[in-house]
Image (cartoon, one colour):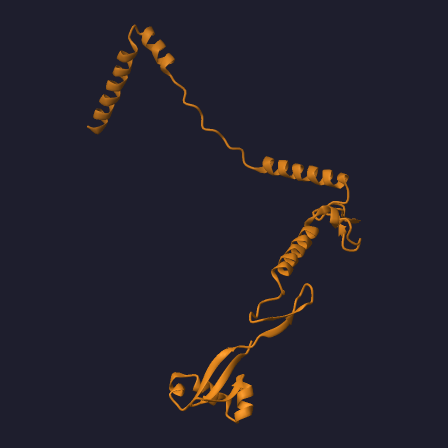
Length: 201
């Protein structure tokens, strides 16, 4: 998108057009014309003023109609064409993902190799990996068997033994000695303390 300039000498307009067109008409260099756009160049007697932008003619990518625009990224002549093109793109994406339309593709595009038996087959869905239900079941059974073997090979996790209380046994010993549970435990504690004291001495 080219800009349109007008070259003035004082108040007189000498030439107008793009930089290349003005350079051809006046014989000036393109670098000199660019310098005239700078603040220092505008102080001189000759000045270059931008008077607009040249519209480019393009063809609509959908309907082929010619249109003029200043936007370099514009592809369609109207909002209706842009909306219709977006719908077409969305429909094409849906056609690629749809299983029903996948079956309508040529057999060469749908030709695959079975993951289990290795035979070639024509797929009916995009995610089909096996040639038949039999191969699919056998593959699943093989996976389950492999997983069970892995579980058997894992080390057995031994649980910590539960705490076993000896209160009943100690209480029976205390009754046999005609003592209470507390008396028997106190005697055992005193005996252990005496042994530690004798060991230290």
